[in-house]
Image (cartoon, rainbow, N blue to C red):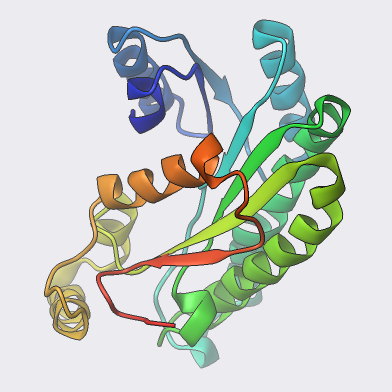
Length: 230
């Protein structure tokens, strides 16, 4: 919705089609064009098809925001191998798939903005999120390396690292009495004494996608209410 408010056409690639269509409806009401594509980012074939349809529809891809993610909070010693593989497939391989799928067209045009959504968990760790934190740390390193490789093509690659943010996923993985205690501890740890909101993250992403940030690349920006400072 932030990008739509700035006049961008928006492609929502998601396995949750009902939510994707709802978002596109809101985008179109805002006066721009939207497209909902059923895409599992863990599938290279589906991601390639998503990029192909996007290019056929709009003729170009200016901006990629890698913002799909998933996790389950539990101690590492209780993790199953299946959990590791799912977390890695979504949070690390997924963004790699999406990035590779759009790079050729960006390189050809010598223009592109890639914003990866990492996490402060990738910078400082997060109890109960060992593999997730590893993936998000990997995204930060991937961002830096890709920024170096893509600079010759005038493609900016940056990273936003949210702290705890009030989203449906957070509600899903912090249910019940234990979850309420986790949320309370999260809020106490933030100097601003609140969780982030989606619009807090969106503003930072939109800035990094704008021409005002044309000389910024390879950076990781924490949007966490002061939870981490560097």
